[in-house]
Image (cartoon, rainbow, N blue to C red; front, side, top):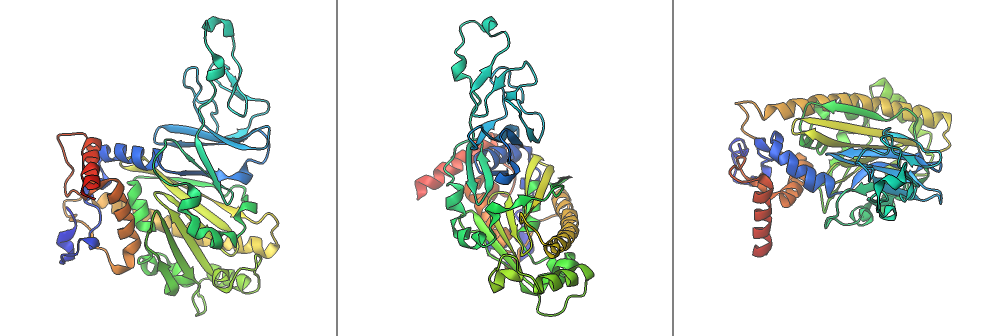
Length: 404
């Protein structure tokens, strides 16, 4: 099930991950630890936390966290975990705390800087040092207004270092000044392994067949750059020929007559996608900015989530262009989600013997290379047994380190 059989060539680079990696509960546990707890996860845009006490929560693989704007107008991040009995201190996905953070279980309260504020029946706890029972902070970083957190420390670089090569291009779009589009947030639960989402998203080879609107917009001029040091970039430059679909034709007509950010010629007629390993994608459009990401609930169930950012002051034409790009994106998302489910379920078929990658799918190949580097156990043709998968993976990593 390594995939080599179908490729009819000795170059293993054309083989993707073996089928077992898409349905293994043990691998899900290992991925949860190494990819989702120890690596940066996107939360929201800083402008979603406009008021003192405003917050957004994040849940990933049994980890719970939140970001909040404190009394000094500073954004902070904490584990969403009361130090009394472990309850969530914030039960809603977003909102505003008026005076303090109140745990809904027993009423312990915390200041917005995480320190303990009040303990009901404090004397009943005996000799407890409550000054040491503040909320546990999370590592947090803000890049161009985008907030990321990390649940556990690792050797992964800072977000600003990882995405440094995108700084200049991203700066053109003034994302830091953007605001979320009300009601634009979306969430889908897919009956698929999360890596199937990445496999579909990391290549444009399927665009001509699977995405009629995208092909009409930029299908002739789409380029995927490979993953390098945890990042990738893809760009779709609008076709030179006239568009046929109404939404695409109308969208391009507006953009031909408007350049709200005075973007350079290339960016003014392109959609640019920037990826950060393992699961975040930022889409830079002439009219708005989108983002999306996915994370696993189990080996066979995934949440995919995203939203849209707009310029703080929009013209009527800008708003209409954003509506049209959103319409194209919604169609594309539905088409991709079908492909994700179909490709994920394929590995369970008796006829499945692996995949064979085209040169046009280098994004998939280099993404898999990143996975192999962190989780060398996925190089094995069949799922290993006899020892915990995490133990086998650690042993393989040690061997690689000693051989260097």
